[in-house]
Length: 116
Length: 107
Image: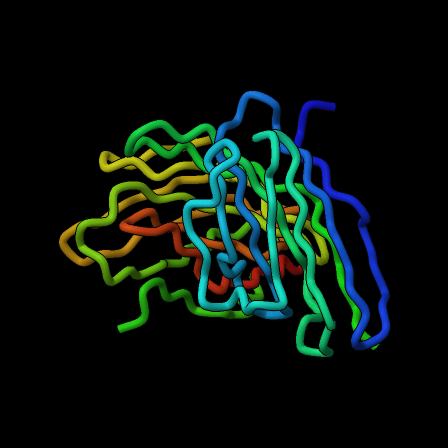
């Protein structure tokens, strides 16, 4: 399977705990994105990487959130001290974007986080 | 005006009918446009890109109206399997998703 993989698919955690999600993009894609989606809303941008460089972070990404892509391949998204408002689907996407050309994302299946 | 706006629906349409919905955008400098389909509790999947001249893929037709700043999606001969949420994506100075339009095809 050469698609975008995310792990885990589901995560239930107690408020205050830390969680970490992993994303493996399509291998030839140089850009990797994290989005968050809540019920009835479109995906909201969190952050993106070009290779290993984190180029943009949304204001939605509070200091409890951190993302890494250490070798320009897989990425991790960590949420510290989780809150109930963090409950959402966390989507990873990758794209092969060069210059101004953008050919659309390929999304992973997402990690559904429930904070209880 | 919101950056990207869609009618949330739901659109309840009998099987076999034609349905169309629009997506408006505020950034006149937006460069590329897409329609994504999202099934319940699944990830969004690229349905089609939207080209300036309009494009068709089977029963689906996408059009771009730059003057009025909207894109449209037309589905002909709708099938039960077309029931989903349709998200528009606009690539301007940043990539923005609409909230989606829910479509229910009724048997």
